[in-house]
Length: 361
Image (cartoon, rainbow, N blue to C red; front, top):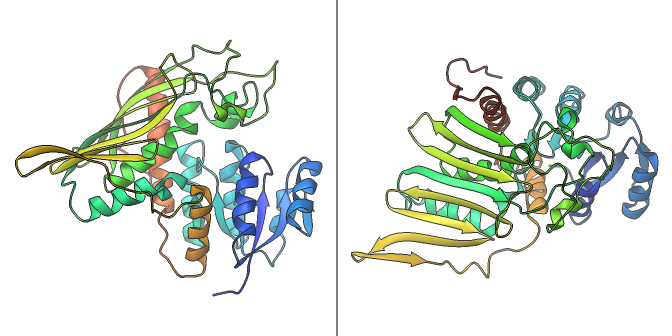
């Protein structure tokens, strides 16, 4: 256990500010270096967070031998490359979601983590939400029974982030709301189901709002808009996942669609009970004394605070050997395999199987 762990943060945008604040409030972390291709952005944050070193080339940052770990907050296409180089440079690696934008990259990341003996973890902040933590305990105690099917989604009415910028440019983002939002609640659903192995998917994607300029979501403020930029990703994705144990999961994610209002949700149906999680509120559906009952747990006294910070602090606990990692590289491989297969299914118009050839890290 070290008194202070030194971190270098790569990519200084809006999400990096959340990460930096989480590190500033942790007594065992020192923010030792920042890197961004735009020097002025990194320098402004360096002044705010009292960081001594600023770089425009992440490879120069990786040469610093005193860094214990790096945190990657760049656009999606660069996560895997920087993570792999960071692991080979002897650093532990935390990266924003998604882990990568294709399966081969995710496999290479997991392989690099295994070869280096260093920790690799990707952001799954929603696992740390009070409602999700309660449901994990509820399920681990056997009160859900067998989780055999469910639904998850995040639907926005008008909430396209950084339209025309990297979010809506497939080469850099990897896709639209499926890879941006889907990674959150597909992960929560599968984690609560006990991490069953996916065997096949069917997916569909739609691009219907490339011309809209309306917004009713605070989330559309992420990214930098470009009026003459690219929009070659979906704005709605839907799909269906089958797992090796027979369980299934429906999904739907949109940046823009004609729904009543924005909402995110996870639902699971078990043999003893079911639940819904919406806007942080949990409802349990079961039979008690031969009567169908709906129960709403009181989570008002649950530990509050940002879920990003909770996850980053968990990573510190892992590095300090106080905790086992809640997210492992193989979870990232399965997630990117699912997302990639859903996009492929949407492209070819039929089911894609995942269990015929499973590359392993």
